[in-house]
Image 1 (spheres, rainbow, N blue to C red):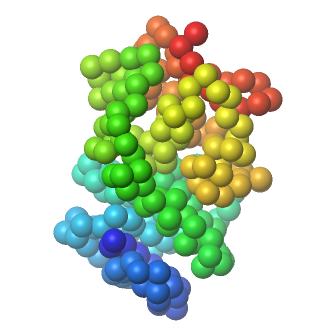
Image 2: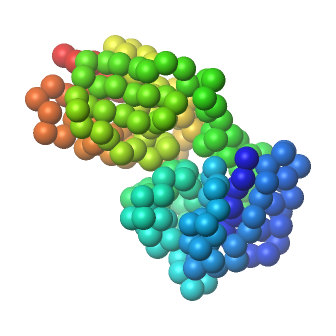
Length: 223
């Protein structure tokens, strides 16, 4: 499994590369945003680890450009900024997860596993609920005849909902299952992702499938 690390701080890049290679990943490094875009476009990577503050082109601009080019590789954003606005800006740009500097390698490793863990064998057969369909092998999702384009985290959240229909899932459960992490201080990040899903899945639909249960969490149901 190949991972591209786009990080201009040489010590941080070397730290990440060494740790991931010890866990069996193949790791390439780009030292600025422009180089990162070029390498991401040429190489076949299962994950991009992207710093926000980069020379020549910042990480948010890099992710936007990749998404505009229809490259859906999951992106883990590294940032020294930990406010909700900064995190949401990264999500809006198209990243799939974030990690605040400084960080322990064990946490980075958990985020990497969360973004890359699903194998073809784990995904199994097509999932269906109402007129919503998901192919866990190809990662394609449809609402009726309309195909829905999702980021890796949006897909993971929708898959969790579809595997547990008519079951209220708390924010804690969602954080643990989709992120393999508890967002004790940033539970609104999950709310942001649910809103993203609603816009893609339920927009202009008479029957809404994603519902909020006040004080409890979220549920997929067709009533």
